[in-house]
Image (tube, rainbow, N blue to C red; front, side, top):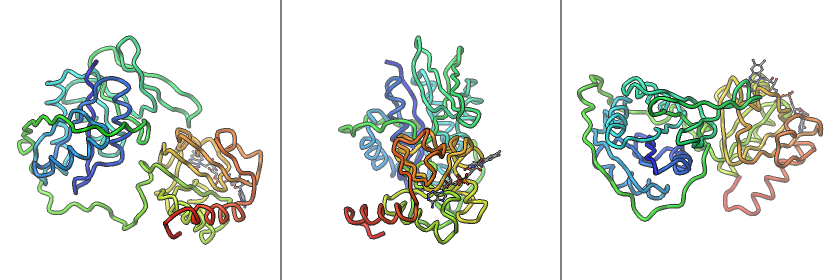
Length: 326
Ligand SMILES: Cc1cc2nc3c(=O)[nH]c(=O)nc-3n(C[C@H](O)[C@H](O)[C@H](O)COP(=O)(O)OP(=O)(O)OC[C@H]3O[C@@H](n4cnc5c(N)ncnc54)[C@H](O)[C@@H]3O)c2cc1C
């Protein structure tokens, strides 16, 4: 079985990013996943434990100090060393902002090919073949590399998490990050805006609202439902343009691309530009008063009706079964 290197993203406080578990799941469908993580030595045990919980069996830990671990270079250096040591069939990296940065630099460093934003990966005659959703999700195209190791960024949320393992084998590699950086970071801000909700791109549940909500005040219905489900809040561009929701919640071709386990679209028609950002969701639920709305073409469950009648009932029903207070 071929080795598949998986770049592990952690927060400044040493928690695994929620891109990690699905990415490990994708890697396991291709070969033997080897996690590559660079962090300070005192974080080693906790990170290895978290990785075991996410199903990792093999972790390559590159020691670097807390300050340089916040920079891209140590990660690139750790992956470069791991590519040399483990002769992988592919390197998988989440298609996050940091992940894309790492992937591009790594490709240049090791002189290999880059495949961007894969929504599916499979093996064909020993080669990794990636599928990409293009032209607003209207077409799926495939790409592969014929020469060398593909470095693949995988759309966040794509992949099934693995069962926890007993304990991962940990290799330690010394990386010489300090040779490459002359920047010192005093403090790393984890979030610029205080909020309890999960990050939209990697949330496992997303509740999105559209123009059908009619006002910013009514949009609170979507937020209530999202909070009850521990989900992130999304919005259509029409809802954002109308001022119901902030721009960073826009899902779609010119917004964020999501692939959650559950996507609930409330009062969203399902224009192709919106679908481009959410149609990779595993389960899509649509609530819309127009039975002909195109969102129903891709919905797994559709409710035809008035969101102002349906969502409060949904909130009450879920609230009655949940320990959370909406
Ligand atoms: C270049 C380009 C890029 C774009 N990028 C994006 C993008 O990234 N993301 C995006 O979302 N859009 C994008 N758009 C815009 C897109 O084409 C649509 O205009 C937009 O998605 C429509 O948003 P909507 O579904 O909220 O609104 P509408 O299309 O107006 O739909 C509102 C829906 O609400 C339903 N409704 C009304 N009242 C109720 C009620 N009481 N209860 C239940 N349902 C109700 C209606 O039946 C209707 O289906 C882009 C467009 C272009 C040209």
